[in-house]
Length: 131
Image (cartoon, rainbow, N blue to C red; front, side):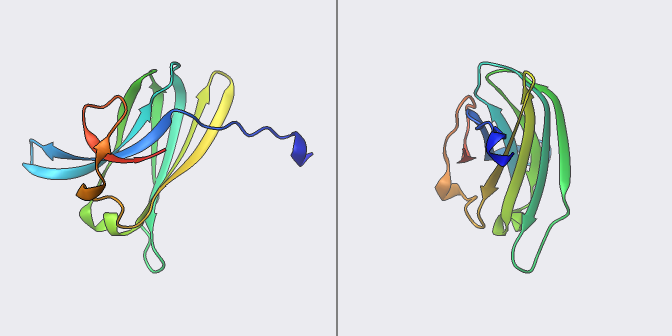
């Protein structure tokens, strides 16, 4: 029965986009990160990303992080400037113990910009955060 299905709520896991200096290319790049602000490790983190608008869509990208330690973060991918004009969706699935969690994080078009920067949990950086 549908009423018997328990869908756990994701807490203390975030996706952030950070504007950081790339030493190799000497450019300012936008990079997406997953932040685990929980006191437990996340196992088998699967992330599916895409950018889209009414008339454009990017290829779907898939990423796997075998284990994301408690109170840590990991880089997901680099975002090109052109993609920032699109809605950017990050579907995150992970295990906490034997329980599977799933959440979709959405950065609406043009919301990733330098005016939207804020202090990020755990990271010593400023970025755009979706909780």
